[in-house]
Image (cartoon, rainbow, N blue to C red; front, side, top):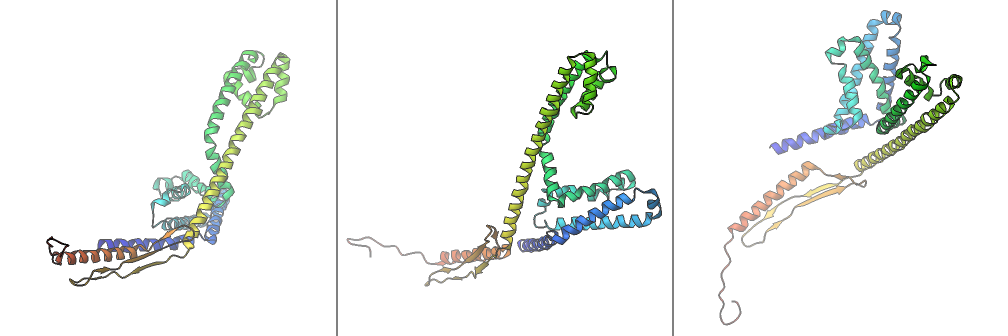
Length: 339
């Protein structure tokens, strides 16, 4: 009885998941959520005007509650789409991000702090990246470029420190405003990395010593051209990897959708046994499983379980019938063949 109830519960969850998936995967649903996010962003901008916020405070509060209800309904539908396998919902990073952003608005501590609540509402705007594939690729590329970026930052920090110490040694006495301490020297060189004020710095250095030209030229070549181009190369490489990942995910989703839409045939013959001491024993069990064109396996789990149980009962009947048959007669060997 427990197995039957488990099968019924499983089939119910599958139906709920399919229904919710039809809604969440529809184009109109994604468009509606995207427009809600843009509308939420517009309302946040309107609230920055003190006069409008004071005059329409109650109306803006009502609109905020409607936004929260809409986003909560969206999360319920997305979670319902994974009712058959709930853990799959938490394997998607975007689902986790959306869930945290929406549920955080219900936390009492966050609702009582207006600054935190505004930041949480602002985080909803970032959810627009979910519906913009190109922006999603860029975010994935930025995440994948972090290891290379950390290495770039370490090398850049070392370069800045070495050149800042050299600049402090040679220019601190003549240009204390820019090289009077290691901190000022690092700030000056960091700005020079963007080539901002390079001409003024070179002219000021030449007034001190003509060798300062070599100092600035080597620094600009290494920092602005070599390191920055290395960073750009790391980001572009990560962007290509992100595009490949996005393409692979889209192909996998297409294959999965093709497997779901392919026709599946499941049939099973009745199981029975015809047992008698004089007659033979016949057992027929048939289970058919249809395989979709897209490579997916479609099985009516409830029907298969029922047929398996019927087959087991039939085999038990066969075993009991065989045990009730009389034992075979013994034959004696004489001077000749068996008789």
